[in-house]
Length: 304
Image 1 (tube, rainbow, N blue to C red):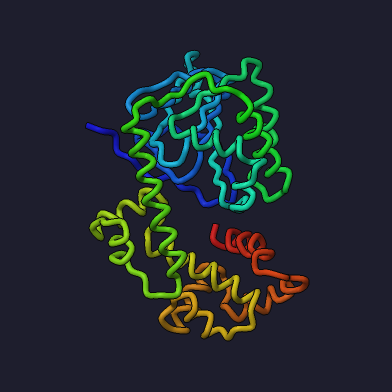
Image 2: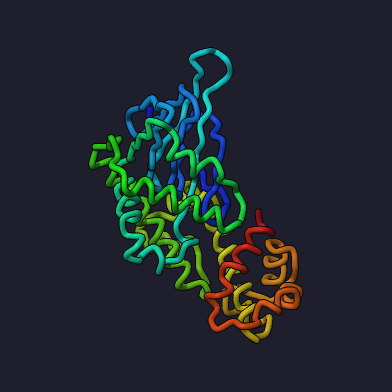
C-alpha cells in the first residue's frame, strides 16, 4: 500500500524554519524545502526509497515532492535533530526572480525537482546562514536566505536523489495544475467563482479538485478564495477612494454585509476601520505595488 500523503503548507510570507517532527505520513506541500540534519540519525524518505543523511549534508526539494523524515538517535538518547526550512519565491517578486542575477539560483531550484543532495564536510558554510535565521520580518533574514541559496547555486550537488522520470513528471504535473487554478482565481476574482468552474479548467471532477486543492495548498478552496478577495480589498482600501460597497463588489462579494463580515473575520476590523487606520500608507505612493509588502504583512499579522 502506498503511504498516505498529507498537506503541509505553513502560513508564512517568505520562509519558515522549523524543528521537524517525525510523521508516519508523507508530507506534500507547495513550498521549496531544505532539509539540514543537526545530528546523525536523520533518514529522508523520498519517492520509493530512503537516504540516511549525515551532519553537513543538505537536501533541496522542489514543491510537490512528497517526503517524510524519520529521526532515530543511535545512542538511544532521544531522537535525532534536524532543521527543515520551507521557503517560497513569490514574496521576492517576479521581476527579481526573472532577473539575470537570480538565474543560477532559479536553475538550481528547477533542478531540485529531482532532489539535490549537497555536502559541506566542515558543516560551516551552510550553518553560517541557517544558524542566524529567525522567523521575523527583518531584512537580514532575506539576506540569510538569499546567501544560502547563492552558496548552494555555485556548488555541485553530490547526488540527484530521484532518477525516475515518471515520479518527477507527476510532481511537475501537480504543480502545473495548482498554478493554473491559482491563475484562474486571480484573473477572475471579481466574478462568481465556484469549485465547479475551476475544476472545469483542470478537467477534474468537483470532488476530486476539492481534495486536490486542499492537499496541495493546505487550505480549502473556499477559504483560499475568501482570503484572496480580502487581500485585494485591503489593497483597494489603501490605494483608491472607491466606496466600501464598490470595493466589495469589485473583489467578488455578493453583498456588503457579507464583505464586512468576511473582512472583519480575517483582519479583525471592518473595511471602514481598516481604511481609516491605514490611510497614512497613501503618502508618497506612486503605484499600488509599493504598498504590497505592507498590506501583506498586516494580513499575515492578523490571520496567523
